[in-house]
Length: 161
Image (tube, rainbow, N blue to C red; front, side, top):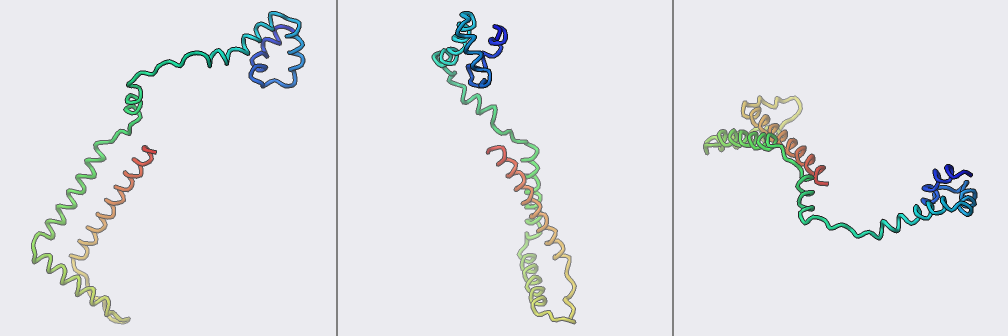
């Protein structure tokens, strides 16, 4: 082997990656002082690097890293959730603001429940009122809001893990 061939393979010899050509390289290193010195220098490099002192880390390194990797909230998402909750809450409070409205709603619900439980094939179930539709839409709004909250929560959980 020539010096150029051996020197191109010295790193692989030091790293233990060269098996097939190793006898030829060792034979060349036994007779060539220049290549042997280069091999010794390359072989001592890992231990010399380990012997170097570990540099001191800045005291504020951890807070800086944590600040950079902290999840960033999106204010529009937060305000959108709060606004939709406020609107939904105001609608519910407006609808149920009076005791008469609440009692009437309870009575109608109980009578419709009684009619549904006593229903038999061939009989009409009766017509629903506008209140039922309103409450159904209100419940749908609450369900959609809950799904939105869960999606925001799952997105934030992925950032935290």
